[in-house]
Amino acid sequence: MTHGATLATELAQAARVVGEVARGKSLTDEFERLGAQTTRGSRAALIDLTHATLRRYGRVQAIVQALSRRGPPDALVQALLWCALYALESRRYGEHTAVDQAVKACTLLERWAAKGYVNALLRGFLRERSAIEARLERDAVAKHQHPQWWLELVRSAYPDAWPAILAAGNSHPPMCLRVNRRRADVAAYEAELAEQGIRARRCGADGLLLDRPLPVERLPGFAAGRVSVQDLGAQRAAHLLDLQPGQRVLDACAAPGGKSAHLLELADVALSALDIDERRARRIAPNLERLGLRAEILIGDACAPEQWWDARAYERILADVPCSASGVVRRHPDVKWLRRASDIALFAERQRAILAALWRLLAPGGKLLYATCSVFPQENEELVAAFIAGEPMARRLALPDGSSAQWLPQAQHDGFFYALIEKQV
Figure 1 (tube, one colour):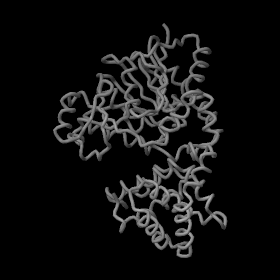
Figure 2 (cartoon, one colour):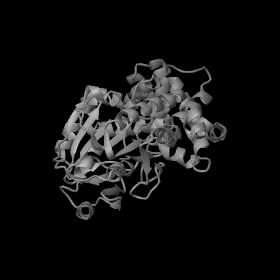
Figure 3 (tube, one colour):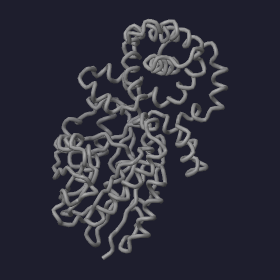
Figure 4 (cartoon, helix red, strand yellow):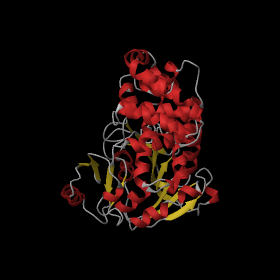
């Protein structure tokens, strides 16, 4: 729990970050910009305040609108109110403390004139909570905390499961570990965690799901490359590709390298890791080095192989294409508010282009795994079905793990889609 004496500082900093997201900035970029300006403890508090506020963005926006008697407040004050409402509803702080510290945060933000307004609005929420709750229940965006267009897409695709999908998107994400088979045994590592009072349970072939998230510094052997943090849904990819020793493998759109590392942990393959973003691609090598792994790192556009390909076919390709990230919004809660309905068609266009370009690089008899962290069929089933229908040599295979192509987000994992396609000889 954050002590009241520091909550004002944390609320002010969180308001600045959330305010930038409201202006269209990426939450990830904002945290990268802050960099060394935050200590580990203050960064954890900031992540809690910003991410949780943005998960319930539709709700806190609606509350401020309902209680603002004089019209919308200054943008930074509005962001402060959103964060303060989360602090109040989280029950991590006493009501008086949360209100008092939000008022003090106005000084830190140089919004002195807003003190009375912030105090009045937050106390008004505490007084009128029951009436406001009834009002929010009738507002779909406030109730489900997703944009209206997003609600409609999910409800149309999943008539029975849509409430659970949206609820998962508003929840705190699980923390799953992937044990490096080259440096550790899963059962032995689970026992080592238990000895240190860290409760975990087996999931998948290489995974351990922690009861509670914790800093990676507390994980035994993390710096020595014995374990990585990777969602269980993401861990499916390496096992679905049916790797064989000596194969030439391409991981397209690979940064920051989590799936590349898993591929190399499972098999002795010649791996090329490709990404268009040079800044993000710089993270691949250090991640592999920590795990004792090595790959060829390429900078280039997956749609333009002539810029980076050496004309030798790949026997396995992982096409981890850019997508809406609709299956991982609890980890990236700004995404659902920064995206627009028109973006889905743009993503699908890009995905089709990447799939067509990479298909030309696949050897006859080779396999390509199409992957997204999306739950929207327009990026997944519909796109793959259209590709198969238009490509005579493409044959869709059953997934080796016997599970469905689309994993929806739930308590144990995020939402991912996989389709395995073979190029017939």
